[in-house]
Image 1 (tube, rainbow, N blue to C red):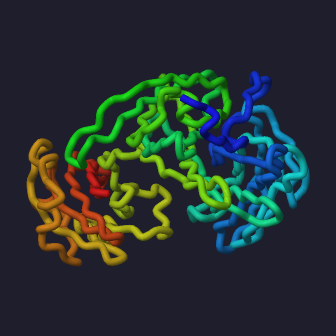
Image 2 (cartoon, one colour):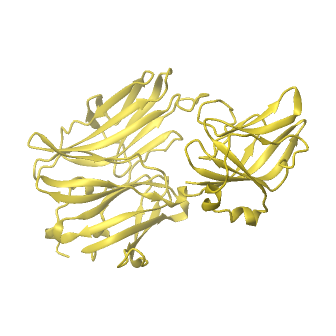
Image 3 (cartoon, rainbow, N blue to C red):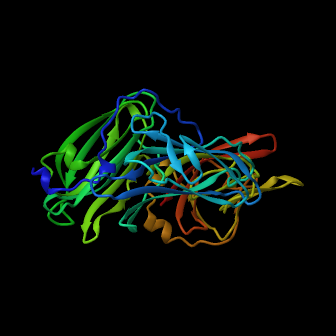
Length: 407
């Protein structure tokens, strides 16, 4: 490969440093996999990272949110911003307040990653003390902005994929930024699959590379740096970290334009988030959101629940599954595990859904192992549900459910 034929954005290929210190990732951490700040001395291109952080609480303030910057080796990174200079920027946000934090690009170009750390207590309402995060890189030259690049919050993952395209002769390449979220070294296996000649043909395995990261280390590279023979390629990259250690990733496609290089964010698909089946305990009197699916043990009316397992306090033996927020139900009947698993989306779509409740009173034929029903959720998804356990609690009856949602 003729490396002179491709131009690299310096913020994607900065040298790595041996890790001296590393952050500890708390429960409330949100990782921004790539942050760039400074001026590229080669051509005067200016990189700034901008963070919009919004307090989601409608009537609660938050004072325990901190934006932390880290170098690629995981050490603290001092950055000049419009909210002060340092490796930690504390935030104090009123209800529904949004703050813009901008790096100022007052020094030579550097890159790393960031964490938005939330150490607030939780409340009854899920939006209380939580924040919304939007991040983008601004690229400027000659006093004018030439590109903005979205940097989504990195979802912790151990197994993911994203599309890949490379044409070295056209400076069209895919880049990857990856942060090791583990507190020990982590090896990530990268497999390239080349697209087939037609949509109906299968992909062909091409090459593999194992990327080893130190604890809390971030790496930003172009794929042809890992795969030197990658001069013309279109397909997918599948990646898996060793021993189920989590990482956060960002993928970008570099494209040449008359005004300079520009970048498009490539959205990963997270294999480890594709699980659609869950075992759920639905306690009598509590609610079920079949889209997720989840039953909230605080039992607060804070989300668009699909079902309430209602009961008559004056007649404990009388109870039923009642729809909420526009969801609908359809009875299926007794299904053993194998026949339940075989129920398809097409079958569910063909059922007759209604707002009628499903009786779960003592003596009802529905209140038994293997009874199945379908939910058309308030978001328009379809879910199938099977009773796997009926659990007596004095006069109450709790339900162990198998839930499969098509999403």
